[in-house]
Image (cartoon, one colour):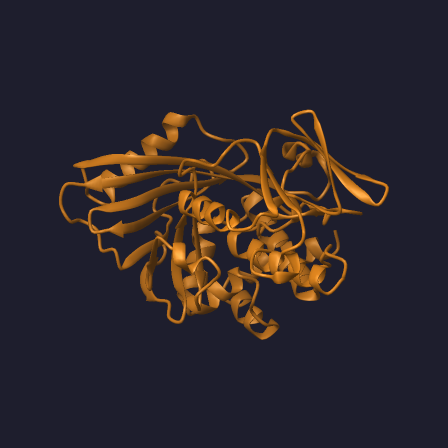
Length: 363
């Protein structure tokens, strides 16, 4: 909204539970060009490593670049820009509800009612785990813990990131590790697990420690920062919102169900909402046919992972072995055409994927 004069005379209130003052998240994504947040990109890589027990390779991903943004840089950037606009205010308090009321919307936060012509809501008020009981709905947690570690000597090649390393144990679910060097002596090591249950904190730490020792062959390091996150992976059809409430983020269905990737999808969704508002159109964006097509692909993969019909390390190994990395990244961004989709489909097991796809179509 800050980019468009259309909103310069609109009062904009941002409500959050608490001020954002620490680096509590890291977002990674890929782009072919400079995006809206290019000035705060903390690091980027032009080469990616993929590892599994079935296939491993290093890729040059041009014209893509894999990029990292730290949450604290994101928060500070937004706050600094917002300070230049008198029409933007911040309010801190726990949001209890959002509701339509006549021709406006009301949000109750910290027992205070605030009215607006539109509310853009990113909160999921319902219990996600209740979705498990719904017929045809798959629900898995993507949960991850990361250590930003520092070594006493130059150890990492900061030009290359490990996109996925599936060589860790798959006993507790689909598991892989990211290795994201941001300097020759510093890297974010992140253990990611896709499963129905979360782990105890020490279990994440144990995997990280073992990975750093066994695969990186590194014993002398210091943990500088830690982060933890949970992303829902589900084919539940999240509501676009209704009336004067527009759902955004994961609450608005912008998390890719089969991968958990969210950052780029949020940016695209926001662009569509802004365009609709400027042109006096409905900001509840209706998914185009291609979006519904990719929803089918996501449900199919969730079906396979949820029912453990095939391991994700073998699926992704086949994808990267039989396709150029650019096509895989484009597919994961929901930007391939149907011809490219067919090439992706031919690279995985028809015996496994075809029955699962048919089941999702006729469910």
